Image 1 (cartoon, one colour):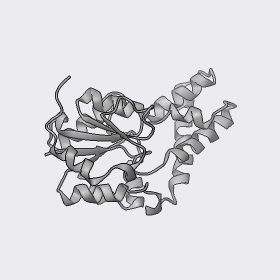
Image 2 (image 1 turned 180 degrees about the horizontal axis):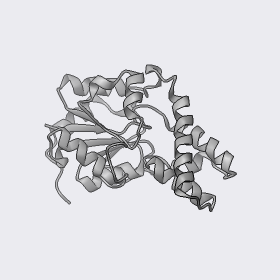
Image 3 (image 1 turned 135 degrees about the vertical axis):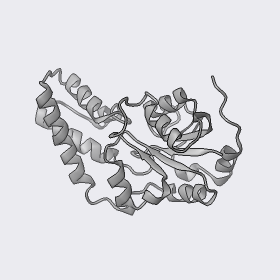
Length: 222
């Protein structure tokens, strides 16, 4: 039996654009230049670490109280952006792959750094596909630490080597590999070169490939 663990942002839905707008809003307020390219460094990283990176970019040091206030400000802006999300935000062919796995009774989990994973799944109507959700409210260590995926595997009652992680970020691929799981990258092959396999999007992920993954032996320990 294999289990699949999905990241959320950039894999199931493209919330990266909303994260960018919210971080950009805060960066503008702080007078820190912030571009789409800068936002790439924030993918798959906890909100706290993202703010640390932003402050490093601006060479700013602040009190814990101010830090916490800006975290809340960014999250409030982000929540405003995602408030109108619906099923149209699901990335192409994600639903096809989820249906394929569900029809074969493959257990599925969500493993995301996002603290808003549950409301986002509810908004886009995908909650029922996942037997468990492990999000940023339940982990201490951010990716590339494998904690989020190891918790998900435990809840699926599967050893890590029988789990397949689908990720769009380098940190997520690194976390999956460290955990001893199969890592499938969604995005550019040159960025996700450490993954066991890479697809630009789910449209490229054919049923024959998924059948092959389900037949594979457990991933050998490195």
